[in-house]
Image (cartoon, rainbow, N blue to C red; front, side, top):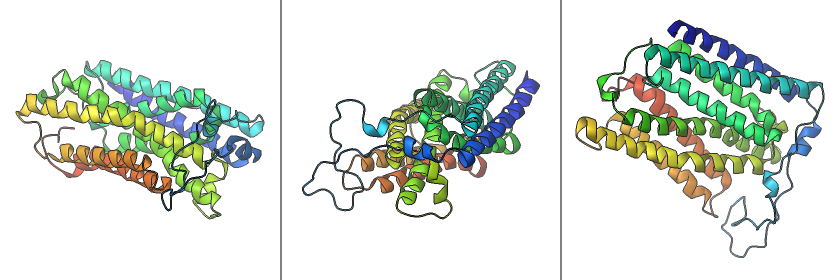
Length: 328
């Protein structure tokens, strides 16, 4: 089973890669009118007196009778390039199933849940991210162009995972042998997977915002065919608003587990410290996003910094620091 898990990982990476190529075909040669159809009508902005200076969004959003305009997306158009996009989605589903098979066979081989070390945890987090993406795509097919960037993230993260941090199957270390292993790591894994998904519209929002302001050089030219900036910004917020409570629960659960295992709730261990840093940054993003005087672009940059701190917590702390979590 361990060998099968390794083989399924390689095949899933290849499937994500082919899906990414198909997405790139649609992105490069698709109907340019997709931009117009996938874009949205700006929400009606009420006249504001004393609105926050410099804000690039209204201080509040007008009430909508039905679904907000920024949430309405038309389905992608038909055509040869669109066929490549549909094939890309099918391949992404196949890759996700292979990805799931990698986790399941790894868990069977280890006779435990497959997130007992950094290698397994990244496999689990990336699967949560791609599963969330497919669920989102099922509800909003007009976001399909984002699949190019999501599959790119999958290829990069899984490639680094398989080549750099691969760990042979083994039993849990004694410190992890607790029911908190399921509670704490499950919450952190779900939140991290959502943050992986959230970074895609966050980056594309900044690119699309620059493109709408007349910037046509690389990398802003990549945003020509992505959905409108309002759509991407709203999607970024909703994903982070969903993930942040899970991250909070995971951090609290980790503190309780630390008290049960090591006799203290907090000890400034590198992993604990960076988890808290990430929590503060993401809390800052949600606060900035709710503050009318803060530009949405500034708030989005805070979300990106939060993702970088999460990567530091996941990779940097485990690879370059020693502490009580070094076994990860």
